[in-house]
Image: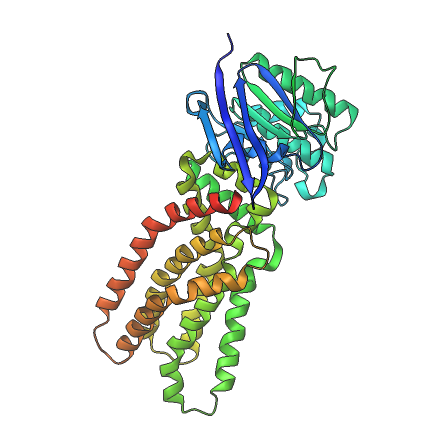
Length: 198
Length: 222
């Protein structure tokens, strides 16, 4: 049975008298993948930020069961990694609350085929590789909900397969993934609910 | 290793790879002290010695203001601050770790070097010791006050001037008590009440700053 993790009820957000999101309701259940898609400036990132609690909506209610289930891993446009730390150190120090042993870190690095770059400073890695580090951080965390802004941008074909596999593993362990993209997502190894935002 | 120490260790690791940036506050102290001494070189030696604590205090205050912007800026620019605020169960603890590591890396070298420079310039040992104590209490208080302003102005592009405008009036009591304590020591007057007042201000901001910062960070990210 799917458990309700986050529920948005009639959420609206306005900025400078301009309505960005209007009366939106959304249920985020465990073991589900949600794709929020729309054109540039449609409010996808804003909606993700409301889900994470970074942005406060102008009106509406957010019922949040996160405390019961753990925390949220958010990967926004910025990767959330430290340029002057190595890949390994970014995973080791990335989460201020949780402590990961080297075996766990090596396992996730292996999963993303990044073993060769383990001791490279993040600033010396490509944009796609940096994106993979941020995905690895979500992967290694105990977060039940992954909120990812454009998870497939800057990734090559093989990396997209790895990310898909990670998402599969996550929803199989009763996690939930909310992602935003510019277009509808289909043909993935997991069921995906596409929601268009205008 | 607990989470608090883990955060401090991370900050030290990042700073150790930032090159000569760590030495900048000390270099800045040298420059200000040299300029001060050149500008008052015509004044009698006794008066210069009296002015040394004031010089040191103003130098440390300016260095502290210049550094404030960096407390949260890098985390804001690279996106790590988002995670910091989302998982906010222990945000106050994480803010304290950031402010403490910032103070150790940016202000502690100045707190150590400034009394040495004062001794070289002719200040007596006892007054230098009091100067060191006042700086040791005063500079972390300034970092704690400044962290609130840094968090509030984080999303603004040119926030350095605004930070200065916000924090400088709040630094006045610390400057007054700090310089008074050192001057009293120089003239052989009791200075304990000034030190006590500085400790009280420090404790107040130790309690207030993490809470105020967490609110300010949320506003800046919204």
